[in-house]
Length: 341
Image 1 (cartoon, rainbow, N blue to C red):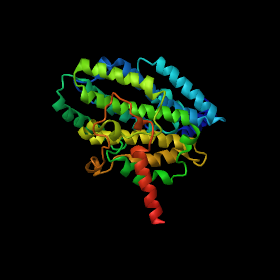
Image 2 (cartoon, helix red, strand yellow):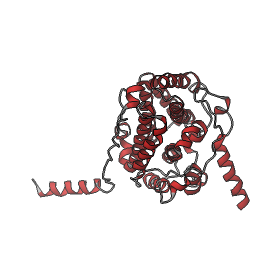
Image 3 (cartoon, one colour):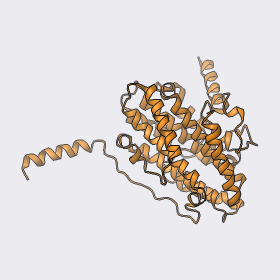
Image 4 (cartoon, rainbow, N blue to C red):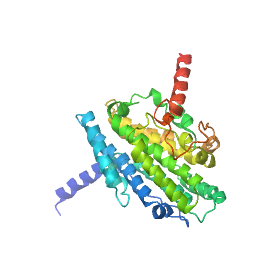
């Protein structure tokens, strides 16, 4: 081969490796419960494929810097609604759904997928009728331990107040609300998904038997399409609000999922904001602030449960109106800020 061709290829290879990241993956934890949710609740599994598709795909849409965000917002919602009616049988990997975002910020894909694996583990455990209700916590804690054993990609089990408000300092960031302000329909869809995920856990804990659980979760699905999509919540709900019993059973996972859901929103804010030039650097800075730190597990239980008797098979008015826990926390932060000034 011509020496000049080799030289040219080496330059291309070197330039392409400047942002190269090793794409290591961690295998899921083995257990007798693996795939129980898929086998027993296939319709709900399909819903998760759409939720995860939407969360990944919007990243690539935002990276394309659409000229008319309002129009793109409507188009994205339209496609998501079509997919809800025509869901995938299996879940594609995030780098297939969002290849541009995967090239930009592979570590972000890792932390999202790693936390989705924890979701799958816990759904499987709760769906496995061979595991007695009083034995569920052992297996849940085992799954959480395994998740936290990868500290570079595991979200902190400390509460939203500690991780998002104190470490990230969400409300002080220049990109705060960039996505919410320009993509209102899409963010409402994501808030619906963030209601649905924890409500399924709460339903599983209240209906441990296979057939009773199957029927109850089908009712949750009806709520999703007949209530939540038509009258969505006006904010992101925290796990403690809509899965109080499961949050008490596993406060670590409740906080981990809140931090995942908030991370999604933070990433979209960064991608949507013209104020952030180096988006990869900013996203990685946020990951470093949100992953687990030594001692975080001791903070896990430090949150209230404002609706301890919440019925996951209902859709009360307070879900659609009011500020909820998010508003309370942010209002408290604003008051402290005013006092400091």
